[in-house]
Image 1 (tube, helix red, strand yellow):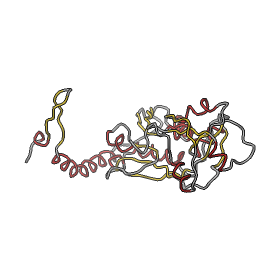
Image 2 (cartoon, helix red, strand yellow):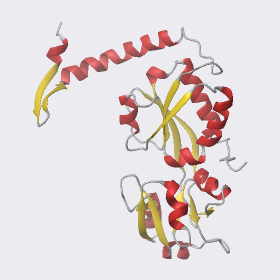
Image 3 (tube, one colour):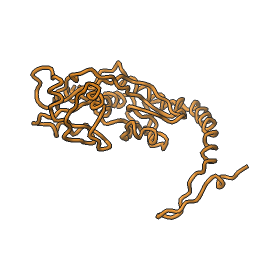
Image 4 (cartoon, helix red, strand yellow):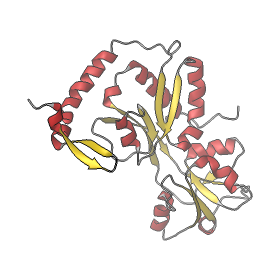
Amino acid sequence: MACATCSMTRCSSAWGIVWMPTARAHEILKHLTPALDAMSTALSLTTDFDPSVSKMTFRIGLTDDVEFGLFPAMLKAIREEAPGVVIVVKHVDYLNISEVLMSGDITVGVCLTRELPANAKRKTLRNMQPRLVRADKPRGPMSIDEYCSRPHVVVSHVASISSFADEWLTALGRKRQVVLSVPQFATLPALMAGTDMISGLSDYAAKAMSALGLLYDEPLPFPTPGLDLSMTWLSVMDSDPAERWLRSRIEEFMGERQEAPALAG
């Protein structure tokens, strides 16, 4: 039987010696993972979870539009049901959700998703319909001509000046003018105030900003496909009572049937 050190290789770097797992180590881990998951499940089933007295810390991943538009109502309910728990929120998106889950930084994430690890589970929460936001009061529905002629703000965590909207416009033979790219949605009201700039947001974030009087929101002036907002977690957490409780609250307050959001009351 090979020893653990035989499954590691030594690499040199500017910072010294770094031990890296070999292909054999990865193969061993692949076979061990189901057994470890089963052991974790068996242990978790012996543990009860009472939210009213729990002092647990939960680490969850959210996109900033989910944090702004859907999380407040959930947090309010959790503060009443489980006043002793602590929630730590980490930013995630479809680019990093797999890495953040596998690293253990979070136990559950809510965002758009693409490919996920083989031991990850995914549940669709809602079909997100994009909307546009503006600082100036609408006089009527925006036309596609006005939409394309206005200066646009793109929200991108990777400093891109394009988004899904550009793909949809290209399919219609149209294009827009992007003048600003920022990394988060929360700064839009301040940046767009007193300007004719517009930006695209998820329906729940757009409605939340509108409800707070920060921006006006309206539908996009052309049909768009919906985007699925999903909850993702690793199978090792599937039967954990505390994590199941947390996922049930996420589904209740971020799922399709929950209208976003009651922030102003």
